[in-house]
Length: 483
Image (cartoon, rainbow, N blue to C red; front, side):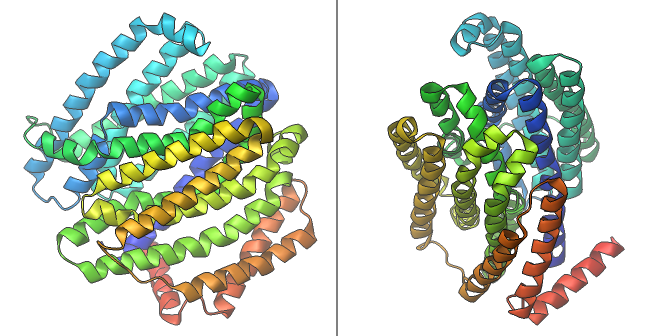
């Protein structure tokens, strides 16, 4: 993959994730204003547990396809291995889904959700598992336009259908039914594209064991990652009630906007770096890591400053004054945590390349214990702000641990001067935002545009982006217009 295509794909994925983020930002006021913060708290817990269960039930095999098929050129091998994984996952989740439906009554009693809601969640989970395979195949083949189409379709489709269901009075059940419909449409469309591209063939289960050796150690890490990011709302619900989850989740939704800039890198770097590393192009591998970190921080540092200042007016606009007052202080710590998450995403790729995924799992398990202990000890006396601070402490621990452990395997240079200039430019931009005092949707949007312009001018003036990089970016957009 050329630098031009890599950067072009990054831009496309940033746009895709920003559009997908509209799902949370639009559904947040719909549910909070129509059903109230308690229903939004329940919705938020359902939304976050589905991806975790999907990763566990698929045994991490979709990610293994990314690592092992990125450099594979033999179409027959691709075909056999893809269908081997797909059929294994299909049979497994079919058995599990039927079992869960049989036990939907006990699950209803445990979760305090109605039986029909439990069954809807199980069907959504079934579709999510299969779609996870297809989306990771687009990722492995670096077909970013197709991947972006399905993510954007899912986000916009859920906004539209959820709005219709809620306005029509179908409540939480209607909102969940919207998720199921969109995922079913995505399944049929994606499966048709994959079959057309690789054809039908006999599955081969011979390499399944190799895939599982790689993927199974990632499961504890992903479970732990989920607990670090989302268990706080369950602990908040236990100690303070679902209404406080409704106060916390909107703040979390704003804070994790920072992670939308990280997501394209976590999506693109594994297949790109795997191919380069397997082909022994180590200098190229280091360059991708260096510039990924540099440009991530060029974007996330000002975003951190901006989101923190705009947190309260944004929450007032998107939800209610009560939610804004209760949650705006938490946004700073959550956004800061997501910046460390982004740095971790880049340096952790080194352990993926050397196939030491068990190390990542161990770090995440220790981090989970730390996070849960802190939350149990501090949320009850200090409220939802403690959950946000604990999240930041946990991500700092993860970042420092992984940085230390990867040092002996692979090193790449860091542009420290660029980081310092970015912080200075973001600070100056923040002074403008504080002076402008944006309240109301129009002034918030105006302040965002002005802040981006101020920061961009300062970055160029401070020469944080070199002349050769500007020439590269110019050629990129020329290349983009021609494709």
